[in-house]
Length: 127
Image (cartoon, rainbow, N blue to C red; front, side, top):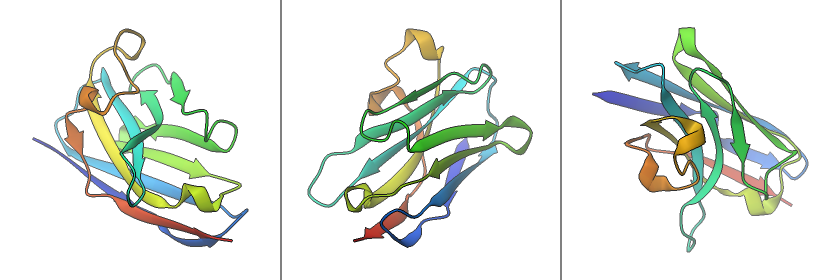
């Protein structure tokens, strides 16, 4: 019912920036959460950032706090991840995810909270 498509990944040198986009199609609700997760080869999928669809509250993994910014444009049904000061350890496939709930009352850090997933976009940071 909801499809998510990521874009904006690519190759960048350490210290550089990228902006990932996630566009949603189909019906979404005002109380849907949107988040970003990432998975590097050999690693488990890890939480990166989340934003409430209506309130704009945001949460970040400690590893990206201060460098990444999640935002949304509800009119465009899109979510963005601005990534600055990129490090080689940020190299991963990044996935957009959506779920319904109140961000303050669910485990927004857990992948199981999210029902809809994009196919991912690769981010590679060279040193």
